Image (cartoon, rainbow, N blue to C red):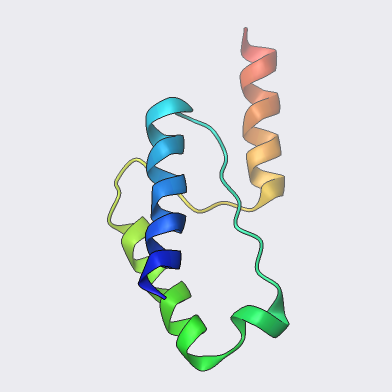
Length: 74
């Protein structure tokens, strides 16, 4: 389980370094992630993400709106 969490965090850290201001989405199938120990791992992922001051949680709609606003401001 910790290898999966490390992979998820590795994806995040790579994105932060190579795509600042980018978007990273995690796709979780409810029949897979919905098991107790996997939910705990997902909660640990969220806890780790929240520690990073340069990362925010937004809906894809909000991300789209932010991107559009940046395009029209140029």
